[in-house]
Amino acid sequence: GVAIFYKGELLYERYGADYTAETPHLIWSASKSFTSALVGIAEYKGLLDIDHSICEYIEVGHESACQVTVRNLLEFSSGLAWRETYEGEPPTASSVLAMLYGEGRADTATFASSQGLEDAPGSTYQYSSGDTNILSLVVRTVLEPVASDRYPWTLLFEPLGITSATWERDAAGTPVGSSYLYLTPRDMGRFGQLMLNDGCWEQDRLLPEGWVERVTRPSPATLSGQSRDRGPGENQGQQFWLNAPNPGYDEGPRFPDIPESAYAAMGYWKQRIWVLPDQDIVAVRTGDDRDGSYSDSDWI
Image (cartoon, rainbow, N blue to C red; front, side, top):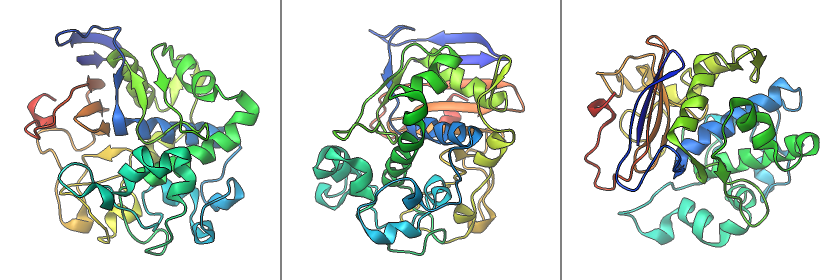
């Protein structure tokens, strides 16, 4: 499906065979941006300080993880040993496959925080679904006591009018914040509009003032020039993909045909929520593009 919104209004949508505007779709790693938003909500409520150790909020699998802050997780700079590989690589060497489909599925956050440090926290960029699932447990720990186990709905989805959301949990009861959120394109667009509105929806502020600017600014780890398994053009804020130039790698925008100010929630097989703030546009796409032939520049 494709849905385009201009100034908050649905301008265009189109769906493939057997899909309609009411069909939820697995958005894979675009889920990470929603986990980031829940961190923002916890900050706004005064329940969380992102510069504190994660061990102030949760129990971890290995004591070395106590050196990691919530900010490190947001910026994919935890330093925890991790391999984010999928098809084309040996499955036994993939940390993310072990977490989602192997022993880690019993408790994704504890599995990820058990890996041990490979780098000093904050020093090195490493895209990691493990970091996000630790973050998801942190969020659950601080929000569930004040908003019940329905906190993603009562604090985020329902205020935005999102009605299609399903968020799968691991066996320990924590939403799999890295990967397992289902939404319709229209509801994905509502999240993009929240970003365009600087974290406000109608008359209510859901996210701290300045939060959107912070999470869509290149992180120090991304700019450091120190990374593990970084793909060409990867440039992250705090669980959002950026199209801004990255001087740490002497790179221009990842997608030259898209405005540099644009940013996105991105998921496997090309799930997308693009936000173009200068144009007041939110562009949403769901799909199943396993052949690698598709580029965001083809449709934005």
